[in-house]
Structure formats: C-alpha cells, structure tokens
Length: 248
Image 1 (cartoon, rainbow, N blue to C red):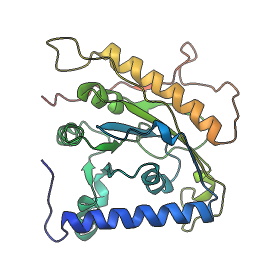
Image 2: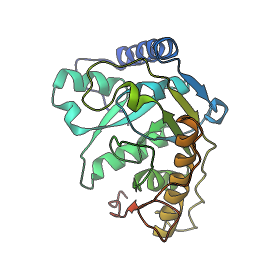
Image 3: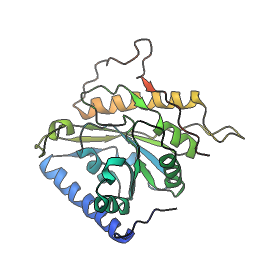
Image 4: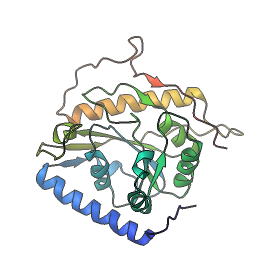
C-alpha cells in the first residue's frame, strides 16, 4: 500500500523525482567530474536494497543517477517537521523512520516497498560518517533483504566528503567517484521460517561491510591498505546488534 498525502499528488512527486535526478546527473558530471562505474550490477527488474556508504548529504542525490528506475528512500523523521516539505518528499517516494529506536512501522513499510518490486535505498552506517574506514554497520539492510528475499547492492562513494563536508553550505568542485559492486544475495529462508536467523543477519552484514570497504577504497583512489576495525579479533566491522522488532 502506497502512502498518499494531501497536497502533493504522486504524479507531481514522480515528476519532481525525475527532475532532481536529471539535474543531479548533469550537475555532478560537470561540476564534480563524477564517474559512475559498475552500473551493470544495478538490477533492471525486481526489488532490491541499495546500500551505499554515507559521507555527505550529496550521497542521496548521487544515488538516484545509478538507475532509471524510481528509487524509494527511508528518511530521518526530522525531515517531516516542515509539513510542506514532508509532503513533497513523501510524494517522491520517501518515508520516515525514528532514529535510535526500533521503528516497527518503518520496518513494515520497508517490507511493503520491497513487496511492490521497488528499489530501496538504505544507508547501513545509519548516518553520515567521516573518514575512509567503514567501521560499524547496522543490521537493518541485511534483515530486510533476507526477510524479503532480495539482493543487497553495495555502493562505494568517494569524494563527497571533500565536496560537501558536514557544516558546509555550498559544495566544492571535488572529484567524485561512485562504484556499484556485485549483488550480495541472502540465503533463502528455511521452510517454515518467517524471519532470518541471527547468524544469517550477522554473516550478511559482515559480507556487506567488507564489500563496502573495498568499494570505498577504490572510489577514494585505489588505496587498498588494511583498515583497522572495531573488533581486532574479527576481520569484519563491528555490528550494531540491536535485534530488529517483530514485523510479522
């Protein structure tokens, strides 16, 4: 079920989405000299979870350039504080999530979006991070992909932190690279189970972290030196282990 908010029709929302996408594509290639690689890894049909690294507010717009399909976004609840803005971004395909706590409604909405066959953007780091290390990931991307039986598409984005760091008002003309990695396909749910096991979610999250680190290294210029992680005894990153709420 798609959410319809008064004041902005879905038709206008989709028109705004395509306007933003096309302007972003042109602007990024001219101003940021942006390059987009690995586009052959983007699914042409069916639902998927697009999981990029997150270093700048530019990332939201740049992700839309990766596919001609209409993407859906999970946004922080504070974006809806201005009702007129909330209505516009909702019409464009966004929906709110409460940070720092289990949001059952957002998870239900996420499963519905994937059930409709749409591509969904989830930033597995949860918020903007700084630096070249993909350290701690939340498990939401692995959970919903496993629950819905759809692939995760990892994306490395390099240069956006230099182009528009936290606190900056205007973007700088820094070189930006966006690299899409091969899909990570979760194992099918065992017969009779409605939820993926904790072991499955952990393993998929660690695989996602390793792939995001590889892609970020390439996007930032090919630096492949070993990276420190949050757990010295484990080659993968720390994982936020708060169990997802039951969305059955």
